Image (cartoon, rainbow, N blue to C red):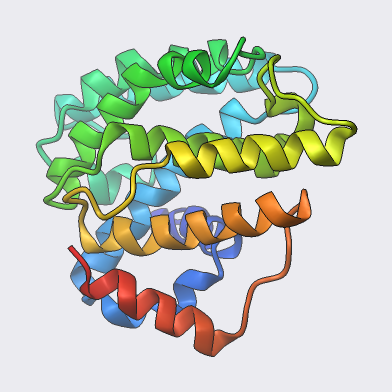
Length: 236
């Protein structure tokens, strides 16, 4: 497989997870779109490691490999296709590498929401620091953590719940945790780049729908997605 084809496979995997982006990408220039898609594809790789089901050893090994890779990016060396776009950016890649092990610990059920957010603090800070270079503006670390936990909820369901979440059944517990994440997610753009604002707005909308239904629901109409993206693109 060529480098171009390998890169496309990672980008396509992210686009398939976020079909809303196909509607929203018209609000992003082609150059910035290429960077944003690579960056969010990289973060999805880390989401996948966090949300692994079953035997975690291969995922843990993959995460260790990513740590080495990111330290290579700090020295302008890359092996992964995503590095072709991201490695030239003078971002604090080593800081992100150092934060990756916290994803392994975050698989264990937290005592409560405070512990869940605290467990990913180093990761949220590192993602925000790198994104400040890659996209030019850094999001709030708490918003990064909330989105990471929201993705975990959607992909891991009850395995993502803190121990203090209450409810008569699993659906009620899932709705409760989704509502907690929505409340703890900072409102407003928080100085984030346009691309992050768009993706975060879609992620928050998914979370709100999950809080009502207790499960992942279908996307709204294309027109509604377009209006949502337009509002996110022009805000902040």
